[in-house]
Length: 215
Image (tube, rainbow, N blue to C red):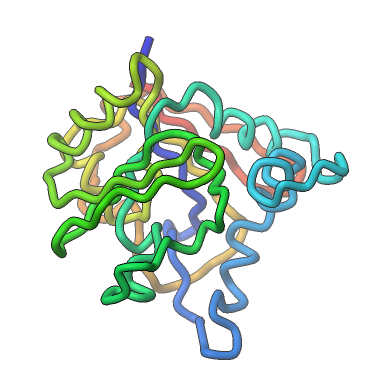
């Protein structure tokens, strides 16, 4: 059965973004630690880095990485995840996912600015830009997914909007063993969320706790 899914990496205190970026270190030092277990997996290396060497971890973290990409028919993401804020006035900016993004499905980018023409990328990804409510965006994505799952990729604010609207069937968070102390926290304004889901937890070899909420 088709599902609307969210997958995010968060810290022990619930933050899904980092705040220590500088011009010299644009991702900061915290981001690699937050997503380190995921980036180390064989699936990430193959799907995102196009590394076919077979290197990378193959334990619990890799199982969730494989699940992340499985049975997805369309993706929804915020403008920040696409990279629109990096060059907001450049009509030729194609995002920061490279020439062949890992999604391989239609991707609907939510934006508050005037929608841009769709961008067709190598490998099956097409970025569509729309200013819409979560429900309208989801309707578009469901139609494009043709019976497969729709993933709300992030960032945290977009994911929280869909969770608050009751539109998410499955939420998976990979909780890294670190404290960030600031940023955008996923759980704000989501008191009692667990009452609508069955919740399971699994700890990976990396120390990452995989928490899954299923409706």
